[in-house]
Image: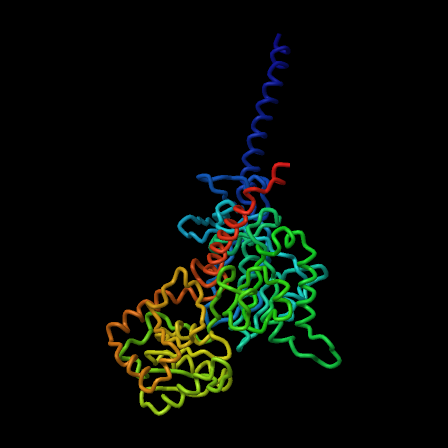
Length: 494
């Protein structure tokens, strides 16, 4: 009997020991899971599918936290290593720059994501070879690599004023990058059938500035060759054929860029500085976007902007004086104003510390002249805005960026060319503007200056974001006309 009792106790002890060992192993494995710094037993896809309040949220467990990088200042040019490798998150996703909704812990980071349904615009960007874009900056990637992992710097000097395609391309690429906080006005999609419009990443201004001249035994310049190749490429695409190119966006900000291809591609939407060298049937306000130049002077911080009494110069102009076409008015104004005691009207260029001198001169002046040159516009207007110097626009044919949403009369003075060259007219007008009226315009300048800043990453309502918003307004009009045209299209019923 006792032997039977002894035998019955053996399984009980064994089971008890087994339970103890199991509990110990369970606790040990849990500790290991919590402390592991490089791996996660929870599949990545599970984190990607988590939803909070109906908004997609991406969690990255155990990811080393990177320091937050501020956007580039207006006077800076991005340098190499300024951006992390561009990662594709999803077919159409971008970050919402809403710090109140972003929570970070030591080993877990949550970022708000907006998809294509939340963004104002969905854009498909052609995967053109690097020779059309970053290759023009000297970047050489690996074989079959289209986009750089780090931002190649854009050349300075006068090249920089027409760098618009560079900033727009960076912004589209960054919509795929989880680590870049930016507005959600536009997102990049990777299926053209989902897109509101098609973006053509051709750095046309840089192509003209650097490669429009013939070298050695060349019979055709690199700039013309690239334009010819672009036309051939676009004409063969189903995306172009679908609407005849009307939903394509091409940046041609330098007045001489795209001169060879513009007629064949004239149905597309252009981003331009002005219409000075474009016939109306190719470029017009009905379909095209006027974008601000990237200013060359350093933006004056609002807190350090000189007041009315602190600006001893009444009128300032520095630049080329002898111009052709509409620019002859500069010569007449020079002879009328050069000897006035409170006027600084001098010849100047970007060389010889020209930008530094212009920065100092504009920041010390009440009014800055923006006079038509070879073309109706120049970066001088945007230099004046960045300096909080009230612009005096003497250019009858000028078109202004975002004028459908900005009232320039609140911070600019407009003078017709015929009036400006009347002896004594301009100075009488400007001297008649009292401190209170000038200060009101000065305050408004400080409020709108951010609309003219190009930077990476883009910020809400900066120049990049404002261009996308302007495109959105054009696209709405295009879609309206396209939908009306289809009303009686019987092929839709087949």
